Length: 340
Image (cartoon, rainbow, N blue to C red; front, side, top):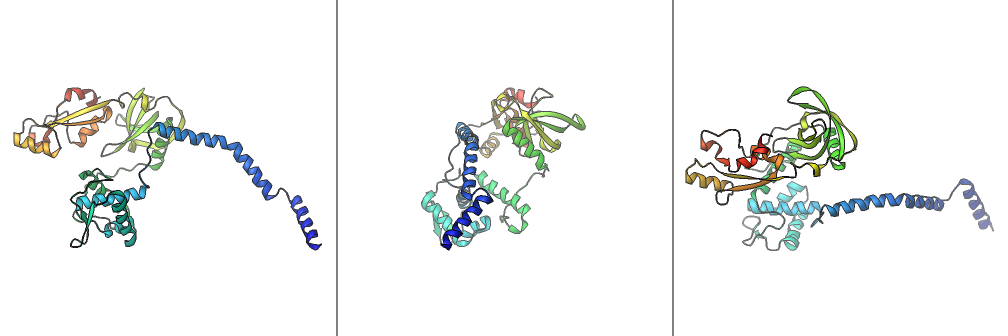
């Protein structure tokens, strides 16, 4: 009898106190259902956009992919891979490093590596074939460069690779707020009001731009954007922005409307014809030329940056052919992109 009375009192107290937990959960569920279609619709739009952009499924999680690439690169270009390589680079234990190598050999590239007890590590087999890399030297050099940059920030990691050195360009400081604003504007194709310094005038110049792509030229970063002041698409150096970008409404001027950006241009490089035939052959081999020609495809506005990277000055015909060693074969075709 006492139990029934207590139960009745508890029920009455709960009813006076307000809605029950079950009732609150029901209300939340109803609210979620009411707000649900918009969120679902947004996710579906993202999914459709990803499919439209040709998004592909990753072959494996990012961290595992990076480990497998590291295994291949070190083994191929240093000729010896040990668990210490993985431990030092990824901050993992020796057992985990051993499992990573074993998994690579079992699931990714069986037979690619052979345990060499004399070398105290794994070496590439005679049938080695890259599975997670392209097998080019640049991948190894980029790995060294990445270690150098990381070691610049975290000195105590000791990532410096012995017997190697990387010449890095001068660091150019760009405010995070500027990059965030430009990236968001590019992602959403929105107008953005900015203050910019140009070589034509030292004072701040307020203007509205519609950015669509960040570009690294090998030396500095710039953003490709539509400039409402000039009525065309231009390059803006990131270090010349001042203040914070002010986001505005969407614009019709996106990457699709940048005709120059969407124009593919072929840059044809050859050894300087004034060089002796044996010298020309050396240069052709240096640049991996075929029949004495190297054709590089790039976007129209990037032609100048490509030539700067290759240390080709299109405005100067060097007096000594050994100073530049290579020349532009199709200079006439590139004229619109060189000085425009």
